[in-house]
Image 1: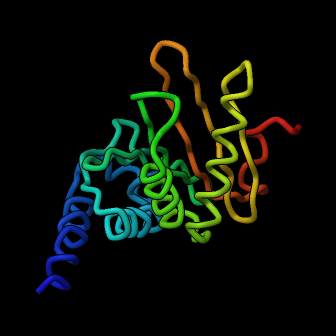
Image 2: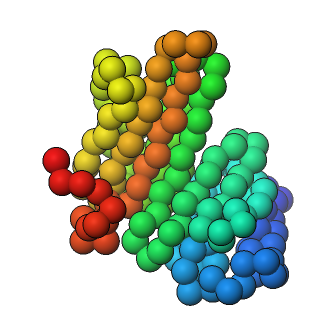
Length: 172
């Protein structure tokens, strides 16, 4: 019984993705690309999130319960982000969810992503800029974390494809 129920959200999300008319012009890029649709289905399957809407640009997919955001700007510039607004210190369950979502996008082992996300988070808390990033094989993690004004955290896990990111990032 549960196996069929587990597939239902994926089928519904794919139906919504396939019939959304406002972004059909970006069928080869962005959220309407075959790659992004596959990642969307994996995110739903692995995290239990629910499709909410596309951005007007067609490059982003928003999910709810749990809330997350998938950027699909082109073939290899794709990543998922989660926010924590209650303090500068999300619980371990939040990092586990982040790593699971990151695995859906990058294919990197969730334990590796969780460990790297904790490391990036700690580094961002120490930085005056509140920002940090970390490259690991096949994933790039970008973090913002702060304790001022009640605190907050945003972590984005990208597919790490150095060739595709040329011209987007400044060399260090």
